[in-house]
Each structure stands twice: as C-alpha cells, then as structure tokens.
Image 1 (cartoon, helix red, strand yellow):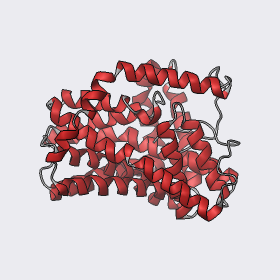
Image 2: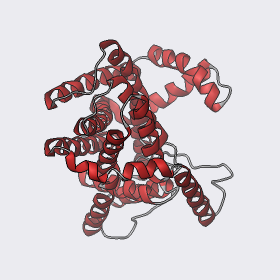
Image 3: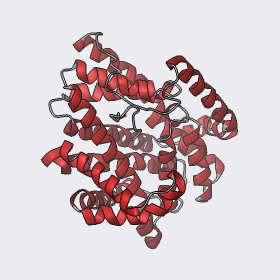
Image 4: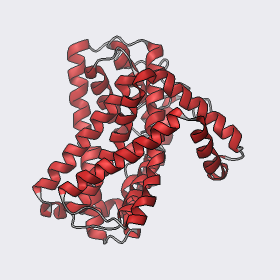
Length: 354
C-alpha cells in the first residue's frame, strides 16, 4: 500500500480518531450487511475448491507472489537508499493492517512510513517516493481496461493451458508497458487522455475542463518522473507486472473452476473490482470486491457456482494469505530494527490503494 503526502482536511478528517474509527466501523457493517448474500455465496464455495487441480493452485500462488514482488520493485525504485527488506516488510505489514481495520488505510500508511523511516530512509524521500509509486500503480490500473478492446476484436476466451496463460501475460505486459511509456514520455499523450476522460471526470467529480485535467495529470506525471529518475522503465515494468500478474491470478482461478468466458469481459470485471477496492468503504475492499467481481463475472456469462469458487480462490491469495504474511513481516522487522518508531503518523497522510 502506498501513502500520499497530503493530509485530509475535510470534515471527516477533523473528527477525533476514535469517532472516525467508530464511523468507519458503522459504514463497514452496513455495507457488509447489504452485500451479505453475495459474500455468503462466495464463502459458501469452499467445497468447490476441492475440485481444483493442484497445478492451478501453484499458478494462483506464484502469480500473486510475483505481483507482490513487482509492487516492491516500484517502491524500491521510488525510494533510493531503501533496502529490499525494509520495502517488503513495511509494505506487507502496513497492507495487512489496512485489510483488517475499518478505515485503516491512513493507519496502514503511517505504519509503512514509520517502518521505512526506522530503517534509515529520509522522511521527505518516503513521502515523495511512495506517493509517486502509488500514482504510477493507479495509472497502470486505469490503463488496463484499454486492453479489453483487442480482446473483443480477437474473440479471446480464458486460456485453457498454462502455456496459453503465459503468452497472454506477455501480451498484456507488452501493451500496458507501451501505453505507460508513452504517457511518461509524451505531453501530447497525457493531453489526449485528459480530453477523453474529461466527460467522465465531470460526471464523477464535478466541473473540470479538459485543459485543467490535462494540467493536473501532467503535474502528477512529472512528479512520478522526478521521483523515479532514469530508472522509470524499471518502475513502469514493476507497475505493469503488478497488475498483469494479479489479473492472471484471477484467470488461473477461473480456469481451475472450469470457467472460460470471454477474456475482455473478465478483464472488465477485474478492473471494476480493483477500482472499487481503491475506495476505502471496507477494509481491503472486503465484501465490495467479492460482490462486485461475482456480479460482473455473472454478466460475463459465468454460472454462479464457478464464479464464486474462482473469486474465493483469488481472494484467498490476494487478501487472506497476506494477513499472516504481514504479521510475519512485522515480527521480522522488529527483530532487525527494534520496536521504537514503528508507527510515525507525522508526514503520512491518506494512502492511495493500488
């Protein structure tokens, strides 16, 4: 999980911490109550997991581990001087905390900030570097739906073999990397994206001209380029790999469940669920992601049972298994650096959620 530098200044941010936690818990409970049937359907698919072939479980776990590794590549490039150990353990520990505390994204960001600072990284570098890595990861996620167009034209379905899945992964990586490189290198590309996105942004966020949106996106792009320096291709490869491998985790879970729908619809379902997870309605998007992903997979023509089993397998790898991993990372960090300074909220604000 990444952290942005600016602190919240709205009315919710001015509430006492305890009041904010209570409000976040209330919202979480209401959302989970409303999404209860969909969530129960997903967790009721435990017995269906017994029919998964062991090979596809290996693919699910390996792709998810690779996605985490790519995330660490992005942050380490953006944090010159930070060790692999500090980046990985702070990311795992902070991410695990954000997955279990209602509205805990800010606390998770503070934990990562404090751990990185404890390991010897300068405060300013942490704030700038992790913000830049978060912006890059969110931008890569936003570009991912563009790949649905060639999938529709080609009429591709979820690959049936591991080799086909690997070829798909290479294709996704190559196209997404090319799009990202163009946006990082060209002002015209950013301006074109701003013009195309302006109508949607106006509906969601209110009045904003294409020129103003282009200026804002260019400023964020320039922040990313300054933070990454000459190593931006390495960071871009990491951001691209992070989402490509995470998407392949879902693809492997669908194949294991015996579902092979249109790949473009699966990609759109994945992107919708990931974008929902960026909104801190519930910790780690729990309930929201399960309900959103099963609903969009149903629109892709997948029967309820295999869709629920595939989503459960995906969330086991991408959510639940990372909770004990975060605890282990926290223990290992404490053994190396000690307990002092584990949490340092000064300078750490609301995190984005890539």
